[in-house]
Length: 227
Ligand SMILES: [Zn+2]
Image 1: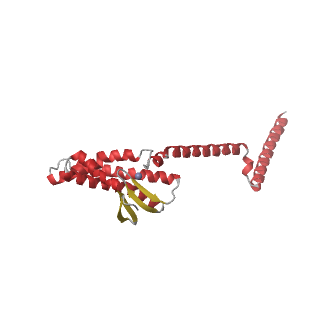
Image 2: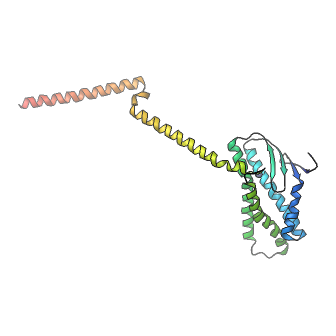
């Protein structure tokens, strides 16, 4: 790997590398806070968010038994090198990144709610930047991640719409085909019957016919008696 990256070791048995652009988050956060301590805390939270996104992808890859070779972190998004994934798997893997971010957002909102009345200075110094990154910056990063351009997840994530539409269409076709078959069967019931069952049916209908003929004959006899 070239000098634009730092190797961060193996996490969960996956080699993780960080591109220098991740450090731009310090500049970005400083523009928000104009304070070194808040910037350091916010940049750390930002890094956690990037990693959470990537490990959202990894969780689904692992669940689908797809080998993960490497993770590279960039300024606003990461990149994962992994084995072959089917169309359906790629869609799920793509959504898992923003899925992990969404969980972080919910946790941050819950934390915000429960710490609203607390007036501890140390806590507010730490929580302020962390909650800012996990809510506002988080939503911004989710939107970026879902852009259908460049190296982001949007391509695979939004492929879900034509994919699901195709599946619905396929299911509808199968149902129509099935209904057609059932209708044909209703018109030609003997098609699927075994020879024994067919003989049985023929015999029983012959018996029924004989019975009806017998009854009519009896009635005719009675009528003749009256005359
Ligand atoms: Zn992603």
